[in-house]
Length: 388
Image (cartoon, rainbow, N blue to C red; front, top):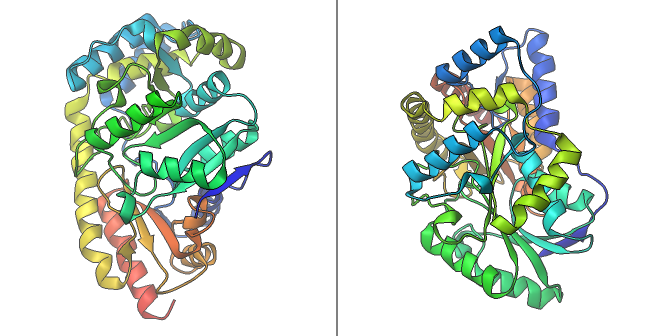
């Protein structure tokens, strides 16, 4: 079933509500383990921290160009050359205040109120909320095992035929939150070609790049110069609180994006840009962090099915386990609340990601330490045995 809506209201983001309650319980002395929010427990890379310390010692932190410093944009261009074999003009790169600002800038520059934009269901709830708040029609396309848990031209054709709504944009995340889906080069090319043929803007969310454990990680930039790519230092680079991300744009969109960015944000924070530039050279340290996520993933893949929690989608990328909890509940929100209250383990109810089917699913983040993940699984196992 397809879901099409045009909202002006912003729906609750339950993961943040769970995080707030978990923080409250931890402050009250409860031994909370949070697997609710996609936040690495590791600090920013040492090179990034040192660069920030030196910049603070100099004391000259101020505005930069609206789309970021030349140094960071050049470093990002080098990143695409090194990792993807691409020659990206730094002038096509826009540094943003986190990937969230990138989505705002893209939606405001590409679409008019009433335009229809397709996203996957289940999918990241902020997509739905930002699009709705801007007066855009949100077209939620179900992704299942039959569609390899990703968007495809066939499903986009079907939603338009069934609804009579023509799409103006398509937003795809790979690796995806919450499903962990990695859309390989072939799938990305099919989607990119379809969008190009039908004059549909293609936005590729690549914020979990670097965190692929199975399948083929490819950037949309390898296939087309027309994609709008959004990325972030939050996940692979362990820099959530620094609020720093970037976009790679078709040349024709650089100036429109810059004008909007100047008015909304003035510039990304300079201190974060300095740290991010240094972080791009810290792949050895960050790959060790990735290896710790891989160990957590292996632990969950082994233990969760044994206690009755079956993955509802592949765990190929990002750092999430999206679980079918229908054996235990038909109310994932109530289930998550009780799990936090009774065993001090925080998880995100599936309703955040899928308003229609999410009452039967739960998302766990495995970006924490292996000791914490193992302890959380033991608590959940005992809780379920007791008839939770």
